[in-house]
Image (cartoon, rainbow over all chains, first blue to last red):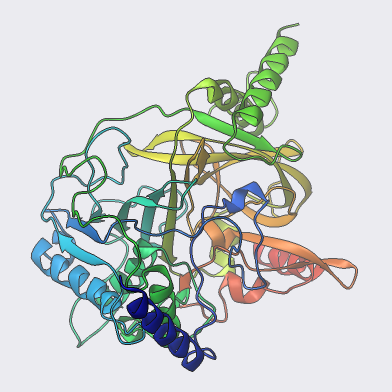
Length: 294
Length: 197
């Protein structure tokens, strides 16, 4: 981008930030810091401040809808794809100082795979899927949707994202009348997570962590949501080239199980991800087993 | 869940063994990515939370281990966290002073999962925790982040806060998150014990 154009864009974003300063300061980006480590800097509202913020590195990203969709709720994959596209377009059409965010999305639907998974050495897909039979997470039947984002902890680059919707436990609706749990509201909120945003404390924002059944308010973004989107994907950012292929290529089929190992941490050994705590606990485990046998 | 061969709390003994097993698996290769999650959930009442929990404890997470596991045939990263129990607040007290719970998400090498709706269980942070018991499998935090209330000192006593991961829908006046947020520990104990009766 020419220097003058960059300068103009920076000024436009600066003015935009000033205009929205009062309302746009609350959004929270998901970062690489794992709160379970107990080492993250967190603000008073619970937003993790340390670590690298997450983002899609390329200019283009694809998503896929599972072909089964939700017969239980009478929503087919085409309707779901339309809703997900609409949810994403809401985010992609925000005004970032006169320009749009530097990201494009494309559907690769339908797909056969109905699992949340990321394959480190095989093709992938960013799948939206329903759970019509049972919600597989113990003690969490009250969950409405789960979004899983895979990313590089050293760079914050997002590699993969999958969304599971708990259709077996929730009366989802897709129209503007007789709204119960509004699919488009939920999809728009989860799309914000898909793109790298966490929850905000702004009560009227789409990324606020509370939803009132019957409401369609989450369909519409606020200045706080828009500011978050523009920060992650500013117009003119130096993104990787445009490819809608997921990491390692596209596949709509699930892969088999993997054994990726484990890591351990404890108080006094707060270095998540390093081999030292894992090996330290390996030693402790072996000593413990040895004592048990004596 | 099977009983421990040496008696006592099957869950605690089983969990400790699992934790050691998880650490033994730590020799597996480390990788270069990490995973994050987010969720929305229905708010549940304090009464339901207490009724569906096997234990309600005031405890401190002191150690954790993450690994890949199959849950309902799907690959996920989970974290086993060892809790030091300071006090039992529910109807059923744990047999031992430690519990091991499994939560969704965590980190394996440079791969991890963050579940915004899941309990966080940050190390060294005393919390009131509602612990569920699976028919087959480990202990877990009931209702994810709605079953976790980290505390901080306020007027000389721990005060309950909402989980940083909390996200919910339809939280009414009877919901646990409304009733327990910013309660002093003594007041929360009284509420929980009243509901337990």
